Image (tube, rainbow, N blue to C red; front, side, top):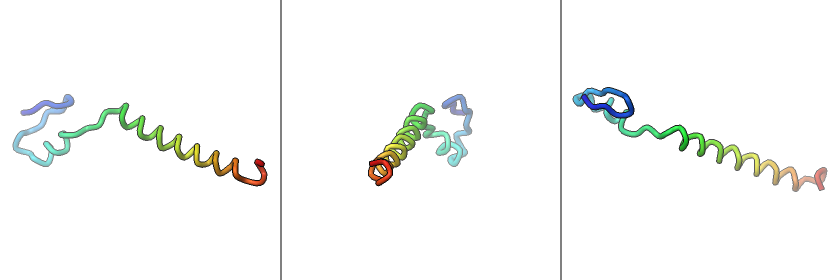
Length: 55
């Protein structure tokens, strides 16, 4: 049995081994999503600033 990330896996079950092989951490995922949200907000703000009503 192999233990990785507190998950016990059977060495003969290759599908389960692949599933456990890579698990990104929470900080990396949250950073990626916050960057996407920031970029969308920034694009919306630029569009708003280019409107006639804002000028």
